[in-house]
Amino acid sequence: MVTESEVRQAVAGARTVVVKVGSSSLTKPSGHLDTGRLNALVAALSAAATEGARVVLVSSGAIAAGFGPLGFASRPTDVATQQATAAVGQGLLMAQYEAAFGRFGVRVGQILITAEDTIRPQQYRNVQRTLGRLLDLGVVPIVNENDSLASNEIRFGDNDRLSALVANIVRADALVLLTDVDALYTAPPSESGSRRIGFVPNVVETLVDVTVTGPTSGVGTGGMVTKLEAARVAAVSGIPTVLTCASNAGPALMGDPVGTAFAPVKQRGSSRRLWIGFAAEPRGTIVVDEGAATAVRGGRASLLAAGALEVRGAFSAGDPVWVDDESGTHLARGLAGFDSEEIPQMLGRTTTQLKRFLGEEYAHPLVHRDNLVLV
Ligand SMILES: Nc1ncnc2c1ncn2[C@@H]1O[C@H](COP(=O)(O)OP(=O)(O)O)[C@@H](O)[C@H]1O
Ligand SMILES: N[C@@H](CCC(=O)OP(=O)(O)O)C(=O)O
Picture 1 (cartoon, rainbow, N blue to C red):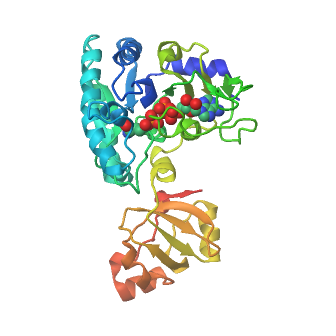
Picture 2 (tube, helix red, strand yellow; picture 1 turned 45 degrees about the horizontal axis):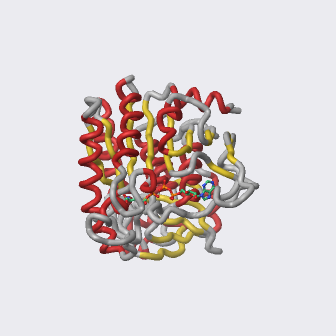
Picture 3 (cartoon, protein in one colour; picture 1 turned 45 degrees about the vertical axis):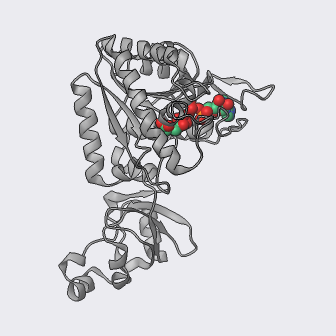
């Protein structure tokens, strides 16, 4: 059982820390950057970086910072305008960060990620390698979703879950989520009677007595719902999390008892398997028979064509897919070993039959066990 003070100490002593800041903490409702708040955040992060911490900043705010300069009265709602607005706002955001970190002699580098880019193993490794090298060079990577190019069907949308996945990629020792409320409350803070929660020992268990909603600021995206999801992903990855307001960044990084601390609930697992489990948005489904369902549920078997009944959706080898039983229950997520159009001819065939009738290149699992994560 991890205590609150252990979580606080872990954050204070973190060698690598991922800090996520939301749109509402960096921008004014008018759609312009709030340089005062951005500078205060950068001062806190620079202090940690100059003391030797490896800091990754996941920063939202591209859309929120772009709509004012483009003459819009509020955050655009259609995808094309949002994407164009992000292209304008992201540049403004980085210019401010470069200037602000530069005053402390800290160099920054921009990394824009699409969910799609990072699902495939090759791209995942590229992201990992580049972030690692930036940190080795003493640079603060500033990460955002590549809003201008992300396709609508497959995107993070909010940066909360992205930050938990980045924490996994860089094998962070702590995650700090900065927003416009000072802590998690038992209900949205606007509701009378809502109480502040200082410590969540197990975010994976249902948080009874806690009501969370989506964003209320008009510029944020996921609200408290996605922040709890991020804390959950971090917790099961063995990473402690603190959630608080951006003006508390300094105290949070120093381990002061601000905001809400979330204890890790598990030892650190493989970051790649977590990535498959949480980040990858499935492109299709492979339906399996009872025997294969039992094998998959056992957690150590690959999914063989012999136990597969049907394939749905259009996907390429390497894409994430659901593995469902016949009643439609999701059993696992995995990365497909074949394109969806290759699979129908393979269904129900043993490995020997695949080799004999279709050739050596087909004598492989539909999803290898290394690429399969139970849900
Ligand atoms: N139980 C809760 N405790 C605290 N805040 C909550 C809760 N439920 C909903 N919220 C709302 O979530 C908002 C933060 O989410 P969001 O606007 O998406 O921020 P960000 O831009 O930082 O990602 C807060 O302003 C708050 O009103
Ligand atoms: N990638 C988007 C983030 C969207 C957003 O509002 O996120 P958040 O404020 O973290 O809920 C942007 O930079 O505008």
